[in-house]
Length: 519
Image (cartoon, rainbow, N blue to C red; front, side, top):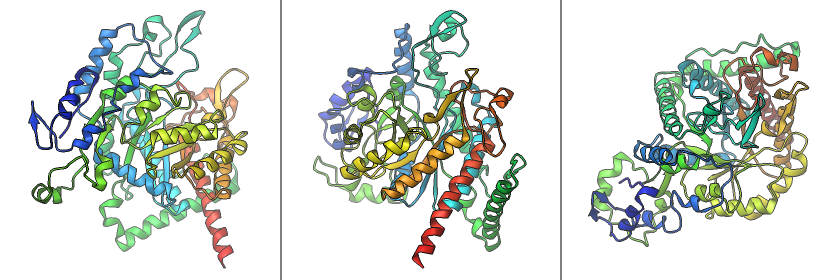
């Protein structure tokens, strides 16, 4: 059963509420009354009655209605089975049994939907995950900022370019980057274009993974020629040797004949900023069934009732099928706001960006709203303070969450709080600041009896020059060589892999010190 509930068809819910399990009216078969009850105080468009930040004003209101109507009829981009599988993985992360690696572009462009760009990102995330598996000695959950990360919040709705005031660039799903009044006008047809670019990207990722893109038999580029300091290069070479030895061992003993070594799971994510788009792709869907037991369940399972105590009841409801994982930005997390209202009703695992302005009690209130049942791993808290502020802010947030009884995934975003401008006005980030925030986050969590479960990075598989530092010695003077971002600066492929080496080293050092202390 699939029932779409949109602002254009609210009668579907009202009609469904009058039905009993097994009824069939106008082609709608209702097998689960509890699913319909979930819509009693929430619906995919209930956000529209709340105050909203970062909203887009469309002059073409009819065009917006047409775009939302079209999106509402298009197939889901992801499935409940995939979403719930990620939820289970994130529960393991929250309990310290796995590690979360999330990364990708600050903001995707439609032009990034090409084989070379997609493959470069996926291969980089795979390579980083191998290093982290070796270092953290845990499975790694991979989530890419891809196939939907088009929209970006802006500090101002307008900007002045060449003396002309015009709307700010809000992302390819809203308006064009070209600095003209016509290009910058919000265009609702871009929401539909975003769907098809996301679908094409997802299709290529799935096809590539099933065809062996992530097969460990395939060679990976472990070149370290960019590393200037001999001692650092030697350290990285030792790690690469150990990772390659582990892969070679698996091949020798025949473990790599298992299908699990030929492919990997990579989930998709984006900031849930454009709520018209998210609403249109939010569907009421049943929980996935095991095909092996489906026949027997149809014979043996009685009709569901309102008092059904099934443990799967929490899985029934609305899924945002635009991505597996979505997050609320630091600028749109108001307790009474539209974005929090939307996020509290979806079954997807969600993230919340927490920055310097977040108060500890406000954080707990927010968790209570979006996760009232305190489901373990349902929420990922993505801390983004900056290297200079994290020590004074993170401990209080950890303490408040621990006292509340919530068990989220704690993830460090060392990018956003460390953005700076050069003397010439170019936005950049320094590798040393990024590394410092990560190291401090790890130490603070350990001291608090908590677990830093993952990292959230803005990166690209291309050889761009947007962030300073790293073993390659990139300076501010080098930024002009290949500065390509349309939004915030990203780690290039060498810097990202180097960061994975260093994080892996942190965890190895911790493990070795614990072994020494236990002797």
